[in-house]
Amino acid sequence: MAFRPLLFVALLAVVQVWSDPVSADPILGTWQVEPDQKGQVGQVIIRRCGEAFCGRVMKVHDRKGKSVVTKAMGRDLFWGLRSFGGGNYGGGKVWVPLFDREYSAKARLSGNQLRVLGCVGTLCDGQLWQRLQ
Figure (cartoon, rainbow, N blue to C red):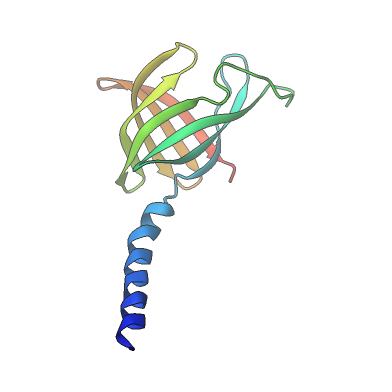
């Protein structure tokens, strides 16, 4: 009789150890992007999408702090981003609204800053995002 509760506790411990590192990835949360060419600033929520990460534009405001609606609202800016460890992410795609094009995506997390890059071959450009939550 005592074996079943012990087996149950052991299974819970294995599931907890296996799931915590995955669910608690430091890239998850709300990020503020750099102002675009119009001075508009967006907020992106990074969430899990299967075994990878996606970043969706949830809010945009102008230089005066007034909410605005853009073509990026509600869209994923990047998807398929995977953790390579040590704050490095890659393997996904990023959509750049200014050019309405998709590029290979990379990101580097350092504290509360996330450098998000779009790349064509070895040529990359991007933004530095700040964590809000």
